[in-house]
Amino acid sequence: METSSDLELALEIHNAVMPERAASVADVLSWRQGVPERLELVARVGGEPAGEGLAAVEPHQRGRSAATLDVCVLPERRRQGVGSTLYRAFSAWAGAHGCETLEVLIEAVDTDSLAFAERRGFAEIGRDSRLVLDLTRIETPAVEAPAGIEITTWAERPGLVRGMYEVALEALPDIPGGEDDTVGPFEEWLANELGGAADRPEATFVALAGDEVVGYAKFHLTEARPTVALHDITGVKRAWRGRGIARTLKQAEIAWAKQAGYKELQTRNELRNEPIRKLNEQFGYRELAGMVFLRGPLG
Image 1 (cartoon, rainbow, N blue to C red):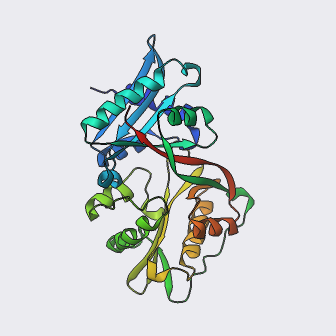
Image 2 (image 1 turned 30 degrees about the horizontal axis):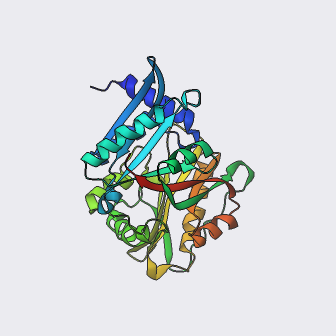
Image 3 (image 1 turned 180 degrees about the vertical axis):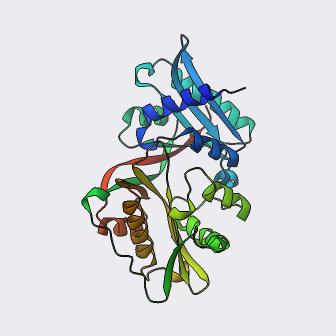
């Protein structure tokens, strides 16, 4: 049986190797509730921690026989077979669970990890830019909604959640790179997308046209990075795009985060997602090294 110290050790390794994707114990426990098919391992060399990782069939992957792969090896323990051992163990697990491929997200500047993946037959399937907005250097923006549009929060109007789901059904598959993703049934979507430790109703913004939910945006807020708010999704129904609704939702997010005391906003945009990339540039987000999505074989 796993102990709290096992999870804390895994997170210590993960957060040391991937500080830009740092997570808390609460984040992991809430993620596990929506992902019953998973394997998490910690690797040791000579009894000392060396690496950790996971393989999981996440809800959005069910339609394509794929599993998420995430492997972290401490820098001083690389080139000692730790990564290869974890890869083989996760591959065996994924094969036993009906998966034919593995999908991994690697920082573009992590040339060692990219080379490790490419040597094993992984190929790039998408690439994200990473953007940051320094909230300490800007004024709180006014929230200027288009005519006929109201901005509220899920905390203020909890009954809007069904309408938000209708937005997700249209918006999520339209995100470049997400065309093959599956949006699950309402209850599953609610638990996985809005029910985590990092999801907060007061930080989830909803655009209304009368009684119709036409868009929403939300943050991912983790205690592992208490001064940083991560943009999760900005989605607008197809028939309502091009009217400035996404801009208004972004204004509401920036204003809330600044007033709540956050120092920085971060987001990732797929390079092909030109509309949201242009919008973020207009707000003054600065581009950093991005992330590479790869898909590859079981080992």
